[in-house]
Length: 127
Image (cartoon, rainbow, N blue to C red; front, side):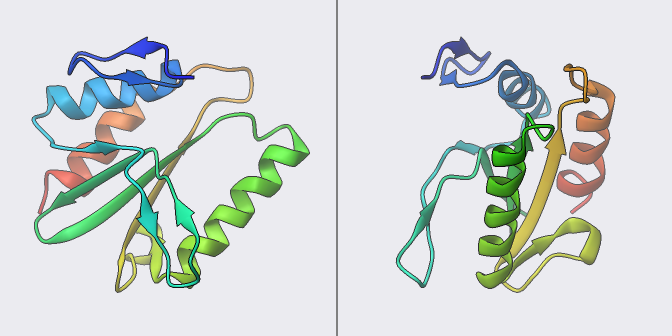
């Protein structure tokens, strides 16, 4: 359920996503929230954020409850799906079909907003 209102005037599911959306918006970065991404195998993913800048596509997933085994398994499944679609993590230089950015909440909850801003500056604004 989308309950958190962003500065851009849209509703997102989680507080952390609202913070990321507000930071992207504040930096003047155009993004799509949960834009469908159709894969060749017929499945559809809904990345938290999709950003196209400098001719490159970025897919941003914010991970939450990694302490829960079922959520951790879901995250591993999604990573494999992105990989099979040619979307690789930014730490590996990205892939032919896009770059995956993953952030996560701290184990006790909370978000490192400074790290979000650093990723935005380094990955999305340097192009």
